[in-house]
Length: 315
Picture 1: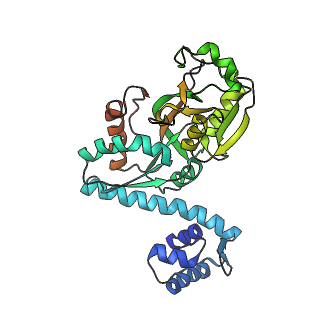
Picture 2: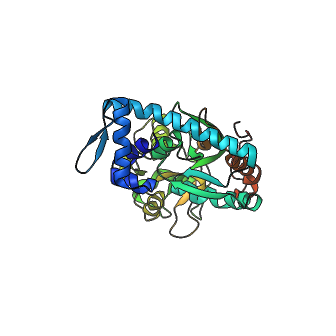
Picture 3: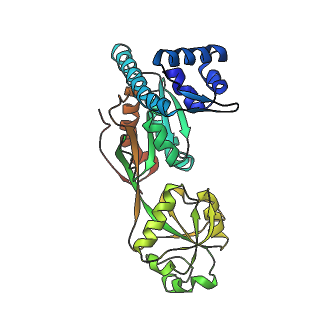
């Protein structure tokens, strides 16, 4: 079952054999033997790729659950006899990991130096699937996460800010009454005041793009999208050079020039980051310890700007 799952994951016998560290002929023989035992074909063999048959997809779905249960049972029994395991895999989008993980990991490794941490850096959409399949012990993702295979535990809530060009442009006139003489924002800005401004958004597939579009819809308008990018750093650089406005989570503000002018929004919108776990799966002692350390050390490690949630790690 493990061999079949890896072939499906890699969509290639060659890559699966390399990942499993077995000879390709041996892997092919094992899959053929399994198919003979089951009396059906699991994979369509093509010259450059491998695809699961309808029967194969059904088998793989069940096999994935069985293998996860077996791995969970082995891990739980080992931890019962030997204590905390030596590995922990954490999934996070790159930009979130850059701002959240380093200070939290420093606190964790001071307390548990024997645990080796592995990062899985992917898009939020990919991490939902990887976490649901048990490829990470836990992930840190923005809510909402709506996959029924997963459960969530909120970690922190942070403000969402409006990022404006630091120099006045012709389309920013409506905000003049919000600025001090030195050009700084003196009061929160209604998002509706930005309805005619060019927006810079993340590309489709990024969760924060959905958040921005929902906030604009709530304010009664659909933003005019001037530019799309896969990097929130690029979005802020475009804003800093006067090419539009955007919304950003508080933690990703640029500390150095060129930087936008940041201001609060009148409705005080927020986003929440949460720990994401697979339902009904054994949560390792190292994962529970990491969650507990984050809740304990987070307010000091990341500062008091965020609202920290106090839920304990799931059992």
